[in-house]
Image (cartoon, rainbow, N blue to C red):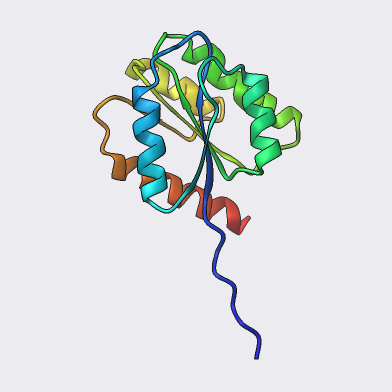
Length: 140
């Protein structure tokens, strides 16, 4: 009798982009994702979009969570999406977080960022978004 394999754990890359040395929120997310059963890779500080895409490719991640607090989200988040696409990576959920004005959210989502989360967002909301988004991508 053939055994059914358990689904693979979600593997997520948490990336701190650009010249942003504030990583407390990203580290909180890393722990929350781990506690939710995900495999977590952390980029460390000052990652470039190219480096984020390379890590995503090397580690075969399901999701990339971008964290940025310095106001460069409209530039750097879409660049990560473009770098992933350049590598042929089209099946990875990309989400962003930080202090992001409401008027910037729609543009980020149009660029390929599936969700944008600000300070005070319940961790369960972000985890639910990742679980649902990765499940949808795995069915494609």
